[in-house]
Every structure is written in structure tokens, then in C-alpha cells.
Picture 1 (spheres, rainbow, N blue to C red):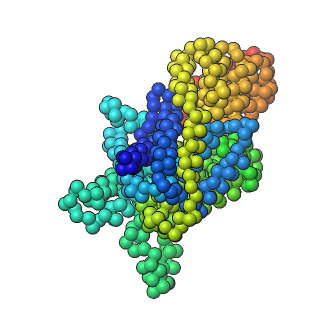
Picture 2: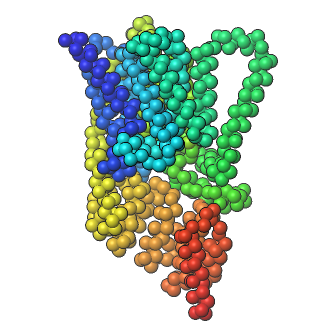
Picture 3: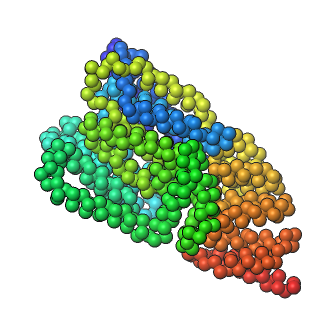
Length: 608
């Protein structure tokens, strides 16, 4: 009976952990935003399954083995800052806040599971490698033949993987593959039935596919992350700290010169990655610059999670009023949802204290990985840390799940120290499992909410606005944190003449995003109810945030040409600004707008 419970416990933990790691393949076309919402729902359900396994583990073992480490404390402190800094009145990102709480609970469940069952470690590493092999195959196939495949499996993979920067994902898994390959390189190459030999060939296959897939990608940050983490793994496996220290003492001058040269090379590669595509590089540098200024405005408290887009837009508007801003910066400016640098975004949303705690949590996880000889997992953390300098991986649930597994593998001691048993705290994992179940219950209806929204989107796209408007209103409480939902609902209300409700929804959306389309939609509704000055103020606000966006001046000119709000001088300035505006690409819509503006000018001159 005891053996049966032990096998059942291990089976449940292994299966739920495997399903969690396979979140990258999760998507549901029946849900609105099926890739992201499908993965979040998958995370909810698989976390509950893991919670069941952890509860079974806690109450069928004689003694809990959970021992607190410094990363555990740092993670709790970081969540404390998230809790304190979150704006509960505005409640900008309730789903994300809940997800962060579930991640903390997941961390402690995984820590307890790995401490109790060390045999789960190689199993999870094998699954991690598998989750890198499939995207690598898809990336190679898509690069060779960009035409979409008709096979339903590849259609599913295309929908599931394409919206996410999965090249960064496979770059993070590359050092895990490389470490496993080097670790088992001395295995019996002919004994394919042995686990060591299987892992050797499996990791070699994965590393080869990932390198091949990366060859088709010209994204420098991905290459930097893969190369530097690969060098780290090779160094730790083939040389190590002791031999390196001895070599430095024997050749200290050569080491100093080599370090300087390596630093210059890495810096040059990083700069080349930002400058190679001039416009994209300038845009990213501008985003980093504006975000840094915004951090200085909220150094202690931060804005709270979800506060980045609107805070960034206000700071960009203020920056463009100064003489420092160049014309090139104004031309390339956008209103981003992310800072394209996770450290800057965390610094803005959680303050400098939150940023330091996050960095310390990563650093000490890496330290414990070195201490416990978890070279592959520590290399994965290093790769993700580098990739996070240039992208937004931590805004996606897939990367968070991968990061938690890698950090837990690093922090959990593979050789349980019996002398520290007296310092263990009982039932920590059980408490985390119970918390996971409670959090799951709090969002149990989210699946059906997104499914209903998907049905409403069909009505919206079929222009059945009157039928959709009332049903959109019924989902407002559940989805008032989704900008796209608010925009769709507002358009339904606008088309049915309910402009006041549309404005209310769009005002809420502006607290979540600074997308210029939201400003345009509010201006349209304000103009429809004869509130011309307020419509003008929203358009002028866009012109301050994005000074070189021609469509803003087109709408301003049309507003000033309205007989009920006629401003000839303002019309002349806005029309001139629009007509002299030269977009990067001339398309049919741009030509039609210019033709319409010339007709308005001609009509006004004729009526004088």
C-alpha cells in the first residue's frame, strides 16, 4: 500500500510538472485572444493538479523537508512590494496580480516537491529540452517554407508559437541542452536503452536543432543570450572555478588584457544589435531613455503593475516639449505596452527596491545553481537574464513558468543535508497548495468569460453592434482590465448612438494603454455629442505624445473644418502639417486622406 501511494504521488507530481512546462503548446481557439488566455487557463488548471500532488505528498510523508533559503525570502519580499505598490482602487491588472500570486505559490510547491523527490530533477530537465525541440523544428520549417502548412498539427503550432518570441525561448533552453550533452558525453554510445545514453543523444539532437533554428534568425539579442550562456556552460563543465583561479594567478596580465578585449567585443555586439536597424534601434533607445526618466519620477513606490503604458506616455509627452528631443526621435516614437527591457519595466512598476529584489533573487538563484552544480539550469537563468535586457519575456506566462522551474532546480539542494533537518519548517508546500486552490477558485469562471467574449467578437466583426452591445456590457466587470475588450465594446456603443457609455469605456481603456486609437475614438464620440473642445483636447494630447503622427493632424483639420466648430487659422495649421507629413510608406489609405484634405481645402476656398 505504501509503495502504491509513493508511486501515485510521484506520478501526479511528474505529470502535473510536465503539463506545466508544456504551457508553450497551450492555446484555445474557442477563447478570445486564444494564445494568451489559453495559456493562462492552462496554467490555472495544471497548477491545481500540481497542488493535489503536493497535498498528497505532504500528508503521506512522515516529515516535511522544506528548508528556507535566501531566494525564498527574496521572492516573498518581492511579492510584498507587488502587493503594497498595487493600485487597488484602479485595479489595472487583476489577472496579472492573481498570476503573480499563483507564481509565488508555484515556487514553494516546486521547492517542496524537488526536496522530497530528487528524481524529478532529471525528468523536468528532459521535458524542458523537449519544449525547446518542438519550437526549434517549427522555426526551421517556417524559415525554409514560410507558406502555412495545411496539416492541422502545424496549424496549431503556428497559432500557438508565432505570436511569442519563441527564438528567445529556445535560446534559453540551449544551455540546458549543452550542459546535458557535456555531462553525459562519456556514456556508452551504443547502449541506447540506458538513461545516460538517451539523455546524451536527446540533448545533442535538441542543441543541434536550436543552433540550426537560430541560424535562420538575425535577432542579435537572441544570439548574445545563446552564445554567452553556452560559453558559461562550457567553461563551468570543462574548466571550472578552481582551474580558472589558478590560471589567473599564473597569467594575471594576460587575463586582464583578455577581459578588456572580451568586454569591448561584447559591448560592440550589443551596440551593433541596436544600430543595425537604425529606426528600430533609435526607437528602442528612446523607449529606454523615456522609461529611465519615468523611474526617476517614481523611484520609491513605482506605479504598480500595469502602470507602465500611461506613465510612459505622460513622460514621453513631457520629453518632447523640451529642446533635447530630436526630430528623428519624434518621428520614430510609439506608445509601447512594454519597455523592451524587463529590468527598466520592473523598476518603473515596482520602484528601485522592487528592481533590486528581483535582481538579487535572480543572482542568488544563479549562485545556488553554481553551488549545487546545476550548470544547465544556471545557464538558462543567465540566458533569460540577458534576453530580458532587450525584450519582454516576463510579460508572457510561458517564460515565467520556465524561469521558476530553472530557479527551483538551482536553489533546491540535490543532496539533502540531514544536519539541517531541525531547521526545516513543516507544511510550507501544503500551505502554498491550499493557496493555489483558493486562487483558482477566485478565477474559476475566467474560461467561460473568455469564451463568451469570443462569441461577442464574432458579432462585433459581423457588425451586429446592437445585439453585441448589451452582451458586452454584461462582461464589463470581468474584463474591464482588457483594452481590446473595452475598445470593441465602446465601438458597439458608438455605432448604436450610446456615446456617453462609449466614452466611459474608452476613458477606462486610457488608464491601461496610451494607444492613439483610443484617443481618436474618444474624440469621435465627443464630436458626435457636440463636445468639440473636449474632442480637440484629446487629439492635441496625441499630438504631444506622438508629434509626427500624421493621422492626428488629419482629424484635427477635419474637426476645425466642421461648421459648428470652425477655426480657420487652426485648420490651416493642421492641414499644412498633415499635407507636409511624409510617412515612411505611402499606401492607398494615405493617398485617400490627402485627396480628401485637398477637397476640403478646395471647398473652403470656394466658399470664401
